[in-house]
Image 1 (cartoon, helix red, strand yellow):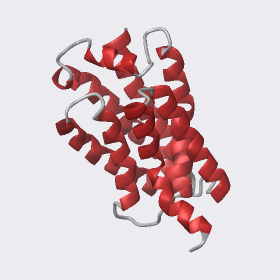
Image 2 (cartoon, rainbow, N blue to C red):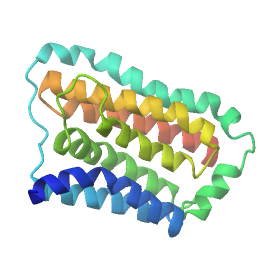
Image 3 (tube, one colour):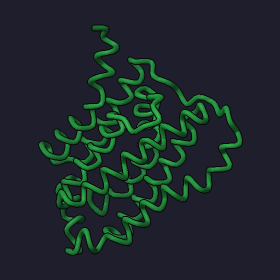
Length: 208
């Protein structure tokens, strides 16, 4: 089998290894996130994955407000249901501290995450691993599954189910954006919107 094909088939396991080692073995959110990003970038460079591309259907940019609002709603929903998921006020703060994220370094962690995560994930998942199917795919499920794995470090498995479903939908919609525009720009911007919304919710509920 071609080495490039082997790399493409195995690369969806990257986040699971990063989270498994970083969060569950070394108890470090920093190691998990940085190793995840570094591995994705290495694979994109080695595999010569797709770049940002250029917009081919400008009329679709009129959907910016709707799509940004849709993804931002995820952060708003997280803020709203927080007391139901974590009725014990200080649990998440204590769990984050166990993983090396505290009130002092949280701003740096949040800034790093917001600046890089959406761009690197889109280059990897919708660029390098991009697919043309109009239906949800196993790669969409792989993207969603690692988010659920992260959540399991903080709460009961029950809450991982809606998160998984929501992330599958998000991954599918980002692929459709890429296919419709011929570009990763809109997926990156809307992905950044949801990352900012979630980070804001965590900040207000945990560190504010």
